[in-house]
Image (cartoon, rainbow, N blue to C red; front, side, top):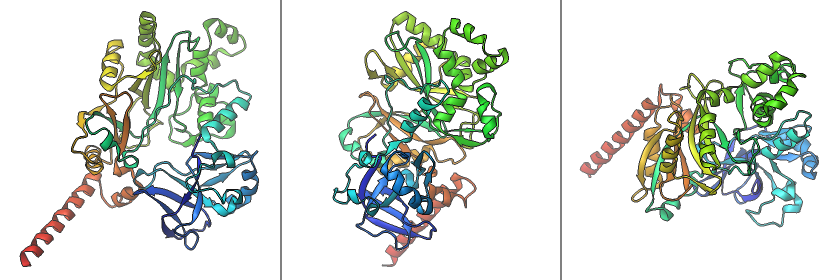
Length: 454
């Protein structure tokens, strides 16, 4: 994957008191690269190597060998293990700007002559954590397959703050607005012909983290046959989630009844029952009658589709407004035969035609015009809709009603770290916004008073 490691030049420095030297966060705000680090460590104009969130330096690279000791003593936000160096910087930070970690360019003398914004991912040997997950799964003794077929498309949502020129390009377009649920996990459910998959029906979990109870290592090994307790807990990585929690789903979708009968001789009846039945995602798919509806449609039409859902429920979400049970909300449909995305209205009619029981994401705008809009006004619109901190609304995804998969997202400022700090003094988000409005009116009144006096 490109741009996991790039050379950048610092445009602004914000110094903080920190025990960790030579390591800092790099944020892209107002078209400038801002660096946040310890005093007297970095300077404006200095060139650094920027590592994106989720970057991994494997142990078989030269960079891993000479960075290990340095990272252990200096790098807050980087974790050194026997297998790799992992960048844990969050992808959602101040005002939701994508940021990562930087290291001095002097640590990489072979890169000194390269220009700013050069992609040095391959030169350093950096890979994404998803690629590492693939390696771990394939090298493990368990027969676990990474659940993402190549023919399933990748969805990308660009933040409007990072692409303000969209207003110039799509000024005459109309957009749908769909609520984003905080803490949901993306899931792709497919129903296809033999051309794509012999099993015809399956599902993929795209989220790389999910909340689950804290268990000892011995207990984690038994999770394949043991129902997890409903408790809040730590985060498991994607490969652990698939290997330990999602095995039942893939075991079911990848085997025929005859093979199950053969395997049953070797597996205890109780273990087999737990393996096939007690899985939250698979249970949700069954309860909401998604498989029969898609299979019936596929048999009637012979077409192949992928339906993307947002999966919410207990042990998944981190927001205060939690759903009491597991649910799936359809957000996108991809036509595999036609190699195209369905427009929002087409998706609604299409899924309603398959089954009225399939939930769809909540619409907040059916016809949002770009004409006369700006980045600030659109962000203000999202703030008005998602102004309650005690709900699961974290923003809005806008989708074109005319061009397939022209999308962008706007996250509410309530989910930025700065705003959360300010909000900690207010009882609710509404109190915060009321206080802001009072300040604005007071400032306006002072301005008018000064105008009259002059």
